[in-house]
Image (tube, rainbow, N blue to C red; front, side, top):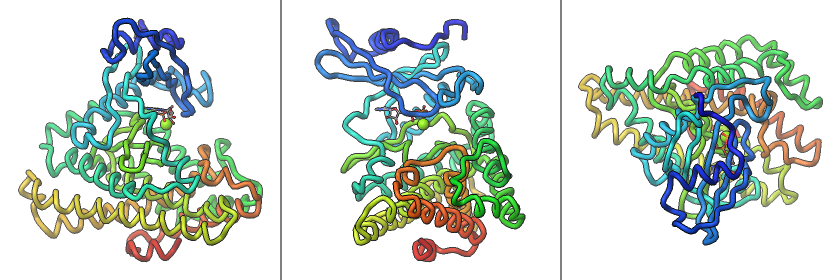
Amino acid sequence: MSDYHPFTPDQAAHFADLHSDLFGDHSQLTAQEFGDGNLNLVFRVKNNRSTSLIVKQALPYARCVGESWPLTLDRARIEAQVLRQHAKLCPDHVVEVYHFDQSLAAILMEDLHQYEIARSALIQGKRFPLLGQHIGHYLAQVLFHTSDFVLTGPVKKAQQLQFNNPELCLITEDLFFTDPYSNHERNTISPAILPQAQQLWLDTELQAEVAQLKADFLSKPQALLHGDMHSGSIFVKADSSKVIDAEFGFFGPIGFDCGSFIGNLLLCALAQPGLCQDPATALDRQSYLQGQIVLFWTTFSDEFSHLMQQETADISFQNKLFQQRFLTQIWQDSLGYAGCELIRRTVGLAHVADLEKIADQSQKTKAETAALTLGRQLIMQRSSLSLTQLIELI
Ligand code: ADP
Ligand code: MG
């Protein structure tokens, strides 16, 4: 990594120009760093005809904390390679990577400026009727085609080595599964819900279930996950959705990606009474989000079942009963991971704007309490809850 240096805007523009033909010979390029993400530099490079590209570069530390939190530059390679592999399997729903430079830890990619980040749009009450369908289709395709249903043992094991991502996985292991269940200094807890947070630290039955979900995260390499499937990793517009930011990708439990997506729609739904003044509007938005959860799971499960029936290469895995049990297990894991997402986004290090944007303190306390309660229910009841019962719980 001897060539590595963090880009200035001019260097990012030069990098983009060098590795793309899109700008043309006499372009005047301007570049601006505008990333609002937690970990990396993100530059927009534009020419004088409004053609633009994105340069994303990893820093040798976590941007949100600073140099005291060193972090591997290899995450840029993981991100570029996961995005490229997923794009091959589902080109409609993945941002296009044009170039990757390993020594600079820099990715040149498509600028999705005509889209908006799903989290911000959903908070504003905007609706994307196909969001759940798009993400259900994306996850079914990429997770099925990187699983044992398709890959032979040796090929999958080689890919597991390629996507070995210990440092970023450790962040998830800590922030998702460990910190919220103890009085950890990284936690951020609103004073009003401190008693409920303290309950989590004493709740050994809940902790046993979370330990099981964590053990599965560590030891169930079912498919090549995106690894960070929250609503801030999805760009949306009316008729299209595209996933970005796959630096947490690794071979893990399929339900982790599904549960992260469901969990973030649930957080947005629980925040609605605090986000809009009018109770009828809040209810209406909640039912839209519930509808998207249903659309997501029905799309994902129908398509995953169909793929298992039609495209399973391994003869053992062609067994119908096994396939039904496999899908049921994905659902139960998804509920568990969605529950963990609700809890860690409420009391852990990384909070979400959905809850943070609630101005009224008592409304915020209500939403946070609801997130902890629903999170616990999903984790504890994941082996018996149906999709209909999940929707009724919200
Ligand atoms: P991090 O890994 O640091 O979290 P992200 O990949 O989430 O970085 O990107 C941070 C922000 O940069 C996004 O929220 C978005 O505003 C912007 N961004 C990232 N990729 C693109 C892209 N391909 N097109 C347009 N904007 C982008
Ligand atoms: Mg990000």
